[in-house]
Length: 148
Image (cartoon, rainbow, N blue to C red):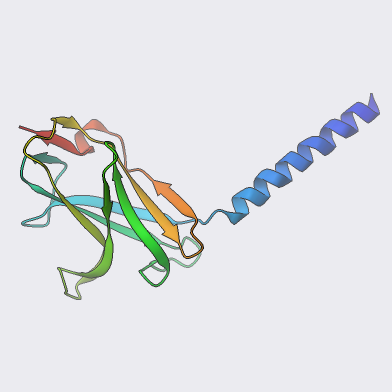
């Protein structure tokens, strides 16, 4: 019985170390993000056909609190629930300004786009090519919604 317990504990410890080692290799990032109306940079989650959606994202290193800009990340991409990918760029805002700096990408809602909620994921790729995925809250009132 002691041998079975020792083997079981040894196996669990090995599995635990493997999981911990795999997690240690995964980059860690903290995300902040929202959506605004393109023409006015006003917070909004409900858009109509023809309107421009601007996704704004700040990515932070949780250890230092420092922003991860274009020199520290290979890319940042919005992946819409329908598979469309929107590349993001890091820069000053308002556009070209110095008031704030973060990642942004825009998408104009096509006239023929179906109405309803549309999930999206932010995919950050570090300089080693490793990806970290982030999804915003899934509360219906704050989810990206296309309306007539």
